[in-house]
Length: 83
Image 1 (cartoon, rainbow, N blue to C red):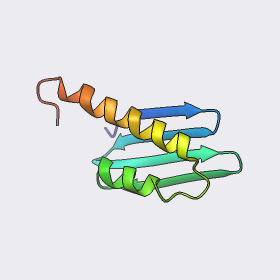
Image 2 (image 1 turned 90 degrees about the vertical axis):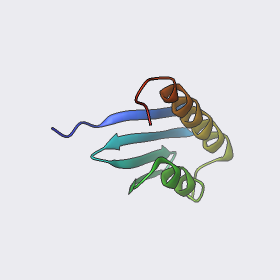
Image 3 (image 1 turned 135 degrees about the horizontal axis):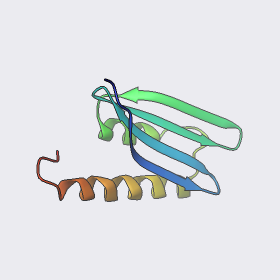
Image 4 (image 1 turned 60 degrees about the vertical axis):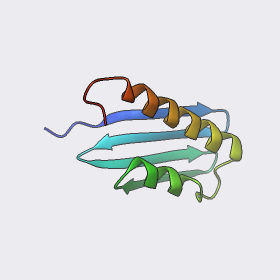
């Protein structure tokens, strides 16, 4: 069974950024007033780098999304068997 897991979900007044994990890929979903984006990447690092070049993404939402992603990665390292 292919299960999609929300890895990180950031919401601000300027929009929303989600990093989802499914079938060994990372799906980047982002939205804001008047725009939406969805793309698939091989790694979280690749998706986070791609996030930086999204037109319409404000700096505040970008910084918050990366902070949330970093916290989630650090949280995952505390579990045995975590990557």
